Image 1 (spheres, rainbow, N blue to C red):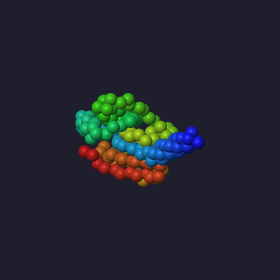
Image 2: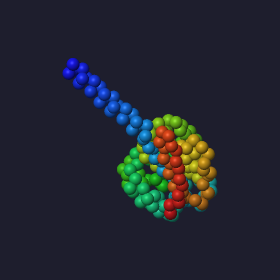
Image 3: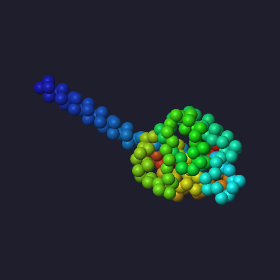
Image 4: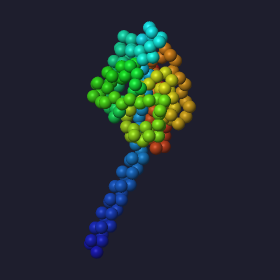
Length: 171
């Protein structure tokens, strides 16, 4: 009889632990920070892959300072000089590997699963960044960024039951 009581007690304890773990996993928060690349060199309008200007390099350093207290699990950038140069100060300060993504081949469901419960920085362009935010939210909430605006910061938080976003300007 004692063995039966012990088995029942341990079974209940294990079941409760599994249930608690399952509930915690469903409450995981995924946090996404999305920015557009910093100011690019516009001196040659035929150059499809320009570098950042001095002003853009300063903004890239400012982003790294802005993100200094955020522990990113992953950092993504498109494969362009201006986006990679924008995020490199943050990548270096966090000692994290940069991952390249193709905004024209965004598989949002796979991305959401891969980044579930993580804190992620994503660098894109005036049209791809709001589009990415909209994909994360599952709604058409944000329009393209004005061509002279390199200061928007989109913050998206997702849980099993909620999707929230806000945009702020960081100079």
